Amino acid sequence: MTATLNVIFGPCGAGKTTYAHTFARREKAVAFILDDWMARLFGPDMPEPLQYDWMVERVGRCEGQICAAAAGVLAAGTSVILDIGLMRKADRTRVREIAEATGLELVFHFVDAPQEVRRARVEGRNVVRGENFAIEVSPDMFDFIEGVYEPPEPGELAGTVISVSD
Image (cartoon, rainbow, N blue to C red):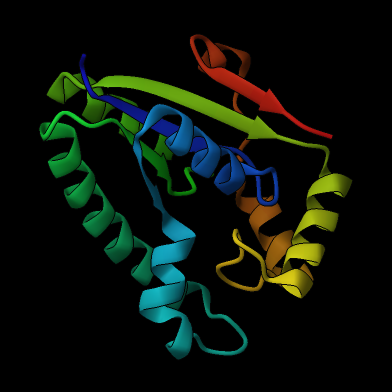
């Protein structure tokens, strides 16, 4: 059996991390969740209010470490699940190009929900701070992420596993 690179993407609050954990347990794969890494490595040092340049630089560092660790897991024959954002089409294209260049089997998973559902989930997650809580997402941060997110075009969804909740 060939190890597969599973990449999850979708907007903030869609349920990507819940999907990643469930999928990892079911498929006996290793999940790499960017928000978990960011919270553990940089959470205590996070400036208030959050500064975009500060965040982007640290996200880049985490992604680099996640990709290096994921490559080792894949090389050992175990499938990987990446929940690393991929909010923009260019980010998803970059991952697709890397997978093609290295001969990795790649499956994208698109997770989505209506905006009002996602906003309510994030607000609830901020209060409950349960299993999938990593960092607090303020209403302003949610709105900012909404502005950065680029929904997939129909052609981008070809061959993609799609999960939509309400």
